[in-house]
Amino acid sequence: MITRFAPSPTGPLHLGHAYAAWFAWHAAREMGGRFLLRWEDIDASRCRPEHEAAILEDLHWLDLAPDDASMRQSARFSAYEAALGVLRERDLLYPCFCTRRDIQQAGGAPHGPDGPLYPGTCRRLAPERVTERLARGAPHAWRLKMDAAEAHAGPLSWEDRDGGTQRAAPALFGDIVLARKDTPTSYHLAVTVDDAAQGITLVTRGLDLFPATHVHRLLQALLGLPEPKWHHHRLICDASGKRLATRDRALALTQLRSQGWTPARVWQALGVER
Ligand code: GLU
Image 1 (cartoon, rainbow, N blue to C red):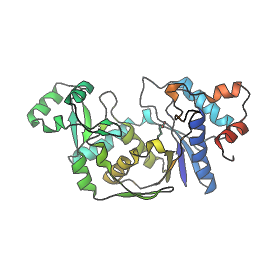
Image 2 (cartoon, rainbow, N blue to C red; image 1 turned 90 degrees about the horizontal axis):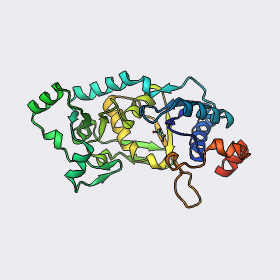
Image 3 (tube, rainbow, N blue to C red; image 1 turned 180 degrees about the horizontal axis):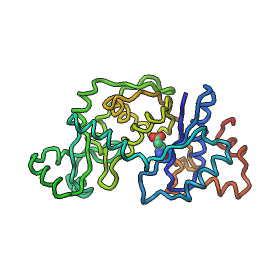
Image 4 (tube, rainbow, N blue to C red; image 1 turned 30 degrees about the vertical axis):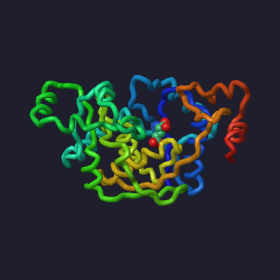
């Protein structure tokens, strides 16, 4: 059993992160497996080395140090490019030149888990216009032809350690972006490629990311990657029932530590045994 904790170094860890890290660590320990770390740092504008240093310090303080060298997504762009190449060769991708505004103005589109479903504007562009725009370097993302991708992969399901067998329904995302205009990958593609590269056999993450698994299962099948199991765990909420989030400046572990919290107090607050 190989599990991982995959933080984005965009801020300090809070109790929700401590639970996610513990959950992955504990699942690996229970089965005599390994617990790995991955830096999800493709968003260069938001990730900072000082956050990484603080996260490592917190993990050591919690005694949840990873078992092996960590993986860094910002060093893996060639692997993502190779995966995009496989999908492009099968004619499952198309370039999209739309701005966020174009998509909003298309209006009325139903919403998926990541926002409004793409209305397919660029999929209908004449091939010569696509060639011309690419040739002049027009900024573009790459989108998955969802219907063609689903037809290619056939019916899919995954084993969820908590929820049992789940039927994959990636179409709820529509033609998702797999490579962004500003970064030649996306969360969905990078996670899928890297979980396989790290040999992860149990993907543990919060229930907020449950919908993403529909897409990840499809990408695995299209790319011929091994299929792990998943366990989507509960989320840690504040007193008002709202999920703790870095951007809301949820109380950081460093702060709790400076108020005298011990790791034992963290485990008690989270209701787990360490
Ligand atoms: N990096 C993601 C996060 O910070 C987790 C990645 C994943 O488990 O898919 O929530």
